[in-house]
Image (cartoon, rainbow, N blue to C red; front, side, top):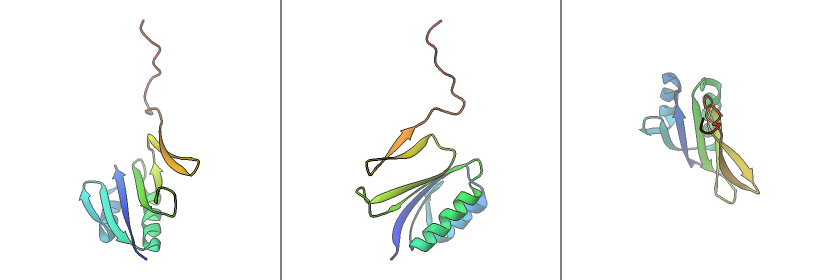
Length: 105
């Protein structure tokens, strides 16, 4: 049975955006929304993970969880999904080039 998905991409190759546009609608640059079967969703995600390169992607789709959805990520992201007693929370990590703050002087 088809279900809705939201896929957010950052700095991915143009050919990947074109492939995603065949199955979904790019509502704003880098945000794709569509209703597809689980098989198509998984194949699209496989294509994303194979070609994300230095970019990043987040997929949100319905799942039989307490929240009613699941989150998948690929590439380098500062927000990392973390399972906390069955709930998915987002953990913020330090910026890759952030220097540790040592205080004044």
